[in-house]
Each structure stands twice: as structure tokens, then as C-alpha cells.
Length: 278
Image 1 (tube, helix red, strand yellow):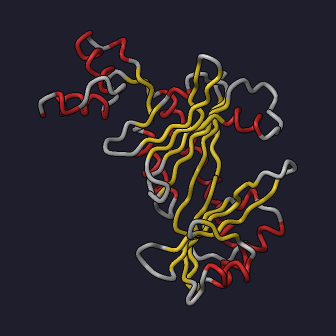
Image 2 (cartoon, rainbow, N blue to C red):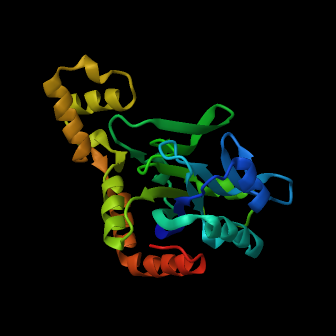
């Protein structure tokens, strides 16, 4: 039976580090510089590096930095490291929240897609023999406030040799980057993104619409192959979910609404621990 849960995944803290270079940050905190950014890394028992926090300077404002991390996953020592970073930030404040939906025992969850026009889509596939399956999908740029990530959490846990909860046969995770600082703003932002998360179910459409939408969704035909009137028609159908299943996304909206107060209380606790302004 399908089960959907939601939790905080990462928070973003922004602030000013005047006259700090990457080397200064490394010397003060031990964060590792790479590709113009800073990383807090953890090594597992097999010697593999796991990224626990990411910090980068704004491309638009010098000395303005953002720090992304999941406070629930940090050890005491890692929390102390990030605490030193935040203590040195001027005007440190919370700017973004990422939440994660876990979907258990729904074989169709990994077949859902985000239908957002003019948005980059990246796919990572696993190939086994003659078959291949989607392992991870990203919609939107990493630095975007609107990035959505879908991946096979069960495969990830098995690859890391981590225990699987009893009764779990499939496990998909959907992560959303939410704008705003208040629960009502999170709900609005998440609803906007979840309205784009749907499963193609074209069988209920008439044969002509079914064939054209299938061609557009699979890139067999291009949008510019149709006149503007037809383009508008099929964009509207996709936006209104004509020919799509939205049951999973609708359940995620309900789960988030039911857990808003609990998520807010958890976030407030983390902000207080790091002495971060809202």
C-alpha cells in the first residue's frame, strides 16, 4: 500500500563574509574548496566522500554567500563547523527551504514527470542488460529557486549498503526547493511545483489528441511542427492535466498541508540552534 511522508531536507542560510577568500574559509572552518565553492565532506566506511554542506558566493554580489545543509544529518562536530561559518557571517539569515517527499510502495512514482515549459531536464539512467530505468531526474538549474529532483531512494540506499525499512518494496523521493519564509508561502510554492508533477495517461483522450501529445512528450515531433493555435491547445491540455494522472501529487499536497505546523516548529528549532535570523 502506498505511503507518502514529508520532511525538511535542507535549509539555506545567506550572509556576508567581508574580505574572506576561499583559502580563508578553508583555514577557519576546514571546508574543502572545489570548483569555486566550498564543501563539508564526510567519508563513509568504504572511503567514499559524501557532501554534507555546500557554500558558494553569489555571482551577483561579492562577499555575499549562501550555505546549504541538512541540519538533521549533521554530527556534533559537523554542526560546530557550520556554526563557525555562520558565526562569522554578517546579517546571517534563512533564505530557502528544501523539503523531501518519500513515496513508499508505488511502482508508478518514478514514472511521474515534471511538465514545465522552457525548463532544463537532466536524466540519469541505470542500464541493466537490455533494460534501463530512470535513477535520478532534475528539472531546473541547481541554483534556481524552482529546482525539482526525483530519484530512486531505494537504489541509493542499497548502493550505500544502508538498511531498508521493513515492508518497503519501492521508494521514490521527490525534493522541492521552496521559496518564502512562512508556511503559507511554502504551501503556495510547493503547490505550484506539484501542479507540474504528473503521470501521462493518454488512453482517455481521443485518438488524434493521444497521438499528438504522445509525439510531443517523447520528442517524436517538435512544438514548431504545429501552428500557434495547436501549440496553445496542447500546452493548455498539459497545464490542466488533460490526459494525465495527478493522484500522487494531490496526495503530496495534502500531506504537506497536514504537516506544516510540525515542519515550522522543526525549522524554528534549527534556526535557534544556529542563532539564525528568520
